[in-house]
Amino acid sequence: MLLEPAVTVSGVLFALGVLGVLLRRNAIVIFMCVELMLNAANLAFVAFAQQLGVAGQIFVFFVMAVAAAEAAVGLAIILAVYRHRHSVDLRNFNLLKG
Amino acid sequence: MDGTRIIFWAFAGLAVVSALACITRRSPVASALWLVVTLFSLAALFVLLDAQFIAVLQVLVYAGAIMVLFLFVIMLLNLGRAGPTDLKGPLGLGVGVFLAGLLLVQLLVLRQTGLATGGVVRPSVEQGMIPSVARPLFTAYLVPFEITSVLLLAAIVGAVVLAKRKL
Image (cartoon, rainbow over all chains, first blue to last red; front, top):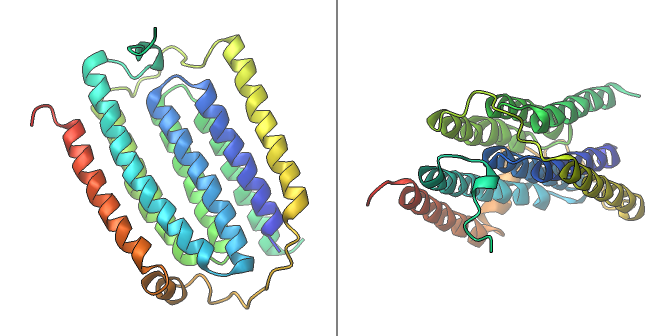
């Protein structure tokens, strides 16, 4: 049974995604790390679906749809911000800083 | 160790190594390409876990559509060159590594406790094929499926409104 190794790999990938979000300053790379976290969660869903029935795989389907919508809107936001600040570095996005 | 397990660990190692490369490369294009490698090896893991249809979707939607969108935006903003490093300073590095390590330890401890569910192990040869995924999708999960279409429509309209210079 591959459940336990799959959940281990899923945890490692999720932690790597969190690490990327915490370490990088490039907005696009941070966004890619969020996608990495979503994929780690998908791996856990698929691993449990092998034991507990097909509902997990259907949930992965919905996660993918939400991720596609999120990528489209998020990249549009990054484009809009780039037009004002001419940078995707998070240090330059400080309009709300007191 | 049987063959499945060896292949599983090979692709799992590839996924972790390329994820590590993805979060450390300086150029966003290199990061995106390493993420594509991670997504492909995850698709291979999905096949090994009896989710063939999800694996095909992973390659088509993630590695195909979403990553092309990312690369397209990187090219559009002309960010392809590796600039000065965008990693945070020593303090941010320490805090980030500490928090991610803490999360990893928590996830691995959590794995020890609850996995012995003893759930029904089904004859799972057919499970990941299209009919067995599609039938519940269009019966039991029909309403969420339709709501997904509204979500995608909202995303399309939102992306156009946000990215257009002047409406």
